[in-house]
Length: 564
Image 1 (cartoon, rainbow, N blue to C red):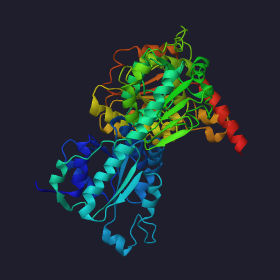
Image 2 (tube, rainbow, N blue to C red):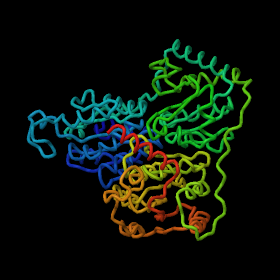
Image 3 (cartoon, rainbow, N blue to C red):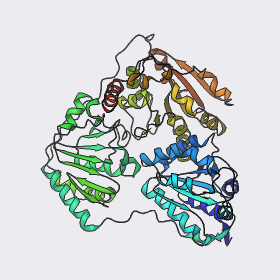
Image 4 (cartoon, one colour):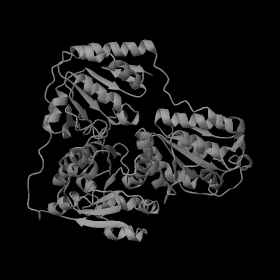
């Protein structure tokens, strides 16, 4: 095979970096491209219910496997996906968005094609995507097509941000040399400037040497930019107390003896708040300082000795070192930090919250009890997805087993994200380990936005746990504003009928409403084996919410009123 089509070249490149599931929908400008997926052994086309769901699925797949690919068609398809792409941009997730666009000749003639605005402008949708993409390319020359594809893949992977790639319908069948595949895409980071890197490391070593009460705080980009291993080793070597943010949950092992809890500013437990804010040195790895991630910007460090490690810069106190990447800084720091931290006298980390007290088995479920109890159900290696709302806040009080991966769209916060994301997560998990469990917690209101993707899960015989929190509407919105407003109500669904409605034949559909029913289910060995798709409806009081969400809602409502 001396030559292959350009379309096949794209999918061969994706397979080389272990992106083997492609998300999206067919449309006439990408149909010929989709044919090429089936020419590459081991690749599969997910075939989503709509483009928005596909973008959510691609986002979660990328969080687990490092990168993903989404394919849509020109105009109507690509625009439907953009809310999901914007979320991936905000939260540092590498999604390659491939768009099948009209042929080069059609564009040149400015033909009045369907899926256009009718004004001959074929670049308008590309320009829209450019604002939420790390880079973009629309292939126009076969001579540079393969190098442009390679550049887009590298940028998506390295920068962990979406990239837009337009492929004209007439170029997909054009032939390119197959030998180009013999040279792998370079996915290595470029080294830091050695002088700048040494200055940062030397400064850090001095700060660590002088610190009496340091802490490590792991945030979202510790996971996104692949420094979880370095962060864990830093904790092991220094023995500094270590904490996570809501977006960083799962970025360090919560069973580690030096793990102290989740820090959310004023929304933290008093013990965690005191431990972090009284530190004389804060090593913040991969920070994304959004309002819901910081308790409405309520971080209150007592010290100015704060070091922020980022993928493309380091901030030490008020000095910023642009272009100095945290991965190399952490690796170099680890070769020398043991010596300067040897005199550190470890202080006790905050104790974990006490387990739930024994209650009568007929006690109705409530959020506070539920989230404390969820940790007993979780297993090492689980992937846990929580929807914007009560679940995203409640999961912060759940103690994870080691090697548990948390997915929660805290910054972008698009309602409905989690159900679409569950599909991508379970497809990625299946590729890694067929026994890896994927567990979704979503509100019944949120699920109504993206419920169609459960059909795709059924189609592929996937086996997630779908926990639906039924609290009679949009509780997070009620807490912020409009407790009894009609716009926070939703039409009740028969949730236990959904799986058979989507064609499932081997499934389990259950409802739990009491503590006894939850414990009986969570302790059942058959239930804990992920051998079928499961829908579990959890009945909860309408205005019941995790304590941290109640506090956050008050802060958000006050901020909204102040800015009005």
